[in-house]
Length: 293
Image 1: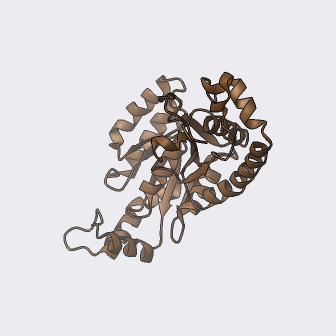
Image 2 (image 1 turned 30 degrees about the vertical axis):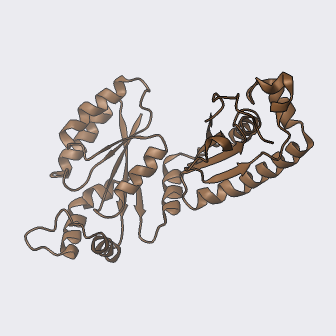
Image 3 (image 1 turned 180 degrees about the vertical axis):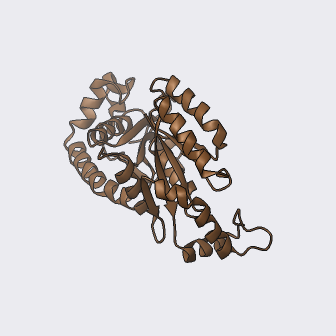
């Protein structure tokens, strides 16, 4: 297996890179003492695939001797754990601006050293790691979306990756609006199975209710338009760097129509390769309160 070693200049975006890797299901450890890396690698190998994606973030504070670090990398290889170095950098002007904007102190800016001098000193200290890097990403001027694309293209070895986590939630309007919704759709315009005696006590998860809801002409038209909208929107959300999207679909009580439509939409998006969770907030709530169409 390979462990991704994330290193680079302070302020260049290692934390943001780590967040992207975590969204890609990497197990990330930040600023582990260098001497502990071989033991950590042994533990990872011993899990026999439990941790298939691992990243270690190493900054200038942990690197006292680059020769020692490279020796440790050789030790890792001997136990069957290879590594790939991802070096993150930015130009001096960008780094200085970022430190001024955040008002944080550069880790090497001590004893009256200016930010620029600290950056130059760090560049010199980390130069041996940069020379050994498998991938170098310059974050100057990169948006979050650009950074995501670069990391995916460089580390996923051509595998398709959808960095958007989607939650589809059915709900009932009479139980209150879900405040976390990014997109909300009201399906109360569809005929209500609650008023059909043999469907009243069932839910949208039952085949009879699902078939009834999805085979309505109005439902077919709506669902086609809904899928077309999602197929259009989701790539643009990904392009802009959105990581999480909550789609809420509501009917009166959250028991029949919205669960059926939510499950159908979830199946459609799963077929497109997206990561989707479908939850039904109100499906088990009291159904004896009279419904309104």
